[in-house]
Image (cartoon, rainbow, N blue to C red; front, side, top):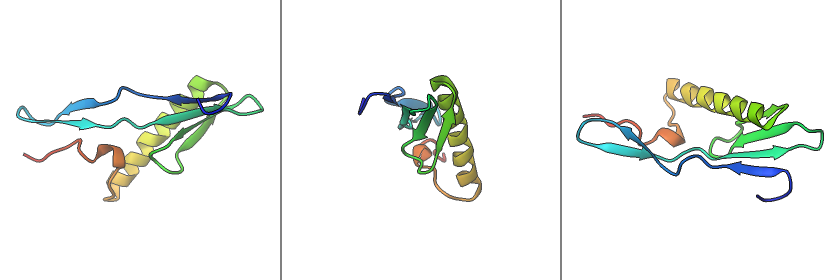
Length: 94
């Protein structure tokens, strides 16, 4: 915790994605920082995806919104041929 009202959510350290029967890759989780604003709203930011942040009336709402936005940004990047940093090792061609 950096300061009062500031929290970091840490997902499990590594997740294993099975790519084939012969190999498995690990994916680094995306780190989310949460902070309560002076007006009582919460802001959540995905540190690994610049510009991906969302407000919520509660901590849970901000977290749900930023996770949804992060998935949309990742999908948009993939659709436009860009690499998504969290998914670099998720898929492997056989």
